[in-house]
Length: 359
Image 1 (tube, rainbow, N blue to C red):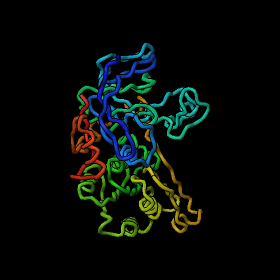
Image 2: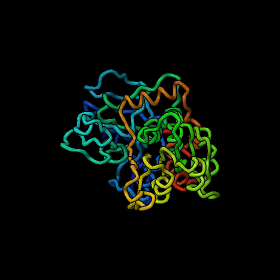
Image 3: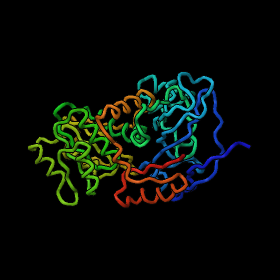
Image 4: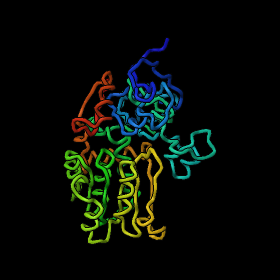
């Protein structure tokens, strides 16, 4: 009988519950990580609500911080007991997609093509991180040692939201001195705001409707915050840019309304960088799209993963360029994760990110 562990399991839409599961067996290319801290992502809430389909019985979660418990025979250059993270996207780096420079769309070892979001395996196609132990596939490519002196909570954002938010700024092609508008200041939008500052934007405008988030946006680098409850955001942004529109807009929520506003504030020739997870069809308004003649770029990003991406993100934190620790507003033990889901999914009590202490 294999040893057992606690894990947060998708039971059915509306129900993610803690249950016992066997601790996974370790294959030659895998690593078993004892999870010390993890968190809940907005995408997990889509899963909880049944808006994003996963298999019943799957362990959820894709943001692990932990300690190597056991290494597969082929995994070199790591030691058991070492503190590590692994990206939410854990590509094989052997697929056509990976070798074509698009590792997030990894089709896997046996695939001859691309698979949309194929690099996102944890809590999607394989058991995820909201558990006492996590099996990391292709560990050589995906385990990234945590620098000494950084806490779990300081690096907790690296596997997903920091990588995603920064990708939004990178995909937007932000240049030094650019004006940027970021729609929604949840965890992803806040990281996009921080990414825009790091890329040298000259004017960063952050939009939300929650006071605590607008305050945090200022901490992360926003020059101006706009509350959509109080102002007509589109006309205000056009006014702030002297009628020119922004060089780049970043959509960080996944709604028609925010996507449309992000397009309406964009200069002709500008880039709309979309990060939101949409749960319905989008419509592109004719006037804002200039009938298709506006030289607009609309780009989407899935958080880059792999150990080099994780190393770079942790280096940004280690150097003090950014501190995402303040985003952790609540802490729960793994046993109480259903309560944490309830808090996070209903956005109560000023919640930004919840640290789940697994061990």
